[in-house]
Length: 364
Image (cartoon, rainbow, N blue to C red; front, top):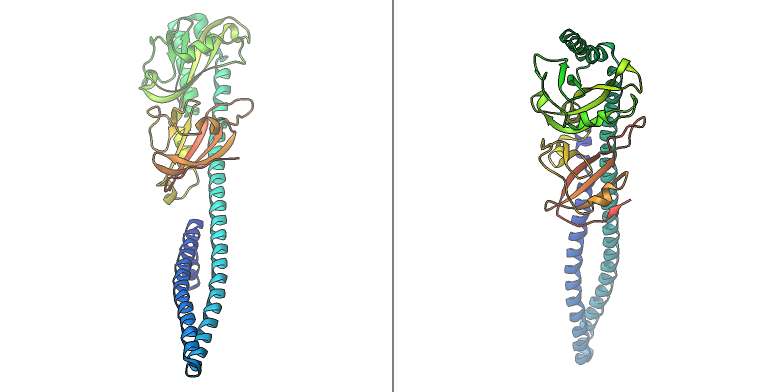
């Protein structure tokens, strides 16, 4: 047998070690019970033999020697089975310790992965807040809403198109006037959104309510008609007179971010094995549990809800072992840590099925 084959044969998961340990303990207990049963019968026979030997007097003396030996054998067997019982208890203790350590290792590992996922998203989306505030001061963008001519709108659209070529993370960049009418966009061939009114959109309203150019607006994950109902995030910034930080608002710039390109890439590259993936769901959710990103592809169609969700979501990073959808699961969690003062406030959740349902407490 080659060295490689030997090494492969020696690879066991912690769960397999625990299962093997439990099996050994179970078989030892069965064997001890059988030995005890035989030993009890042997003891009874030795007592009866001693009685009969005593009754037989001189003729029963040889029988008495056998009875004595049987009694001594019974005592020796009892001592051995007692030792085996103690050894079995130790095996069970080791198995339970491995189980505990295995669960803790699993929970910590998954919660660390959850933290990495949401941290990557926070860091990437921080850049979006910088982009929109910068581009809202671009002369072509400010000029379009200052001049309000078709030529200025066309020029702004071309400028936004150039930006889109360099920043492929966006579906489109749009300019809306103070009434919420889109007057220019960077990708008009694919998304003909000019003339669309967005005055009721969260991204537009939040930008119109900003006090200066250091602030920005935002609309969380949604399907936008501006980009053929694709899933997106929209960051926005007020366009101000002359590009001044506290100038009067003359419109709003919206940058429409390709949400799935980021979120699903992060989820798909979570470092778990192919075997684990079959039993693992990886999500990004908001405070209510609404799924924003999902390894099962059910964004905005489902919400996560489970016992202890509130207490788990109140923790920065944690995990629980709990029954979820009829199965015993490890649910790992990490709250958005934020980056450079920016934070989505979202939750990263990894749910891994373990098998038989069993309640568990919050682990700190």
